[in-house]
Length: 85
Image (cartoon, rainbow, N blue to C red; front, side):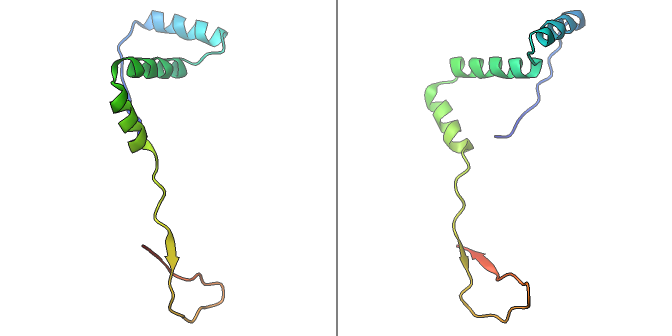
């Protein structure tokens, strides 16, 4: 799924302290914020919308590729042309 960037204004000293203590616990601020946003999403977005987004976000398998059936003279090392169905 495509990612968006969020800019948040926050007190510089508090942010510095937060990063310091997260680092001491081997935690990453970006990962912690991402996990918190996921919890907010789960709490406030209705289940049917989450299900829809899950389905929409899944990469549907591409249609199978059929190889051309016409015999074409091939050069050494050439790859036969393919067509999408």
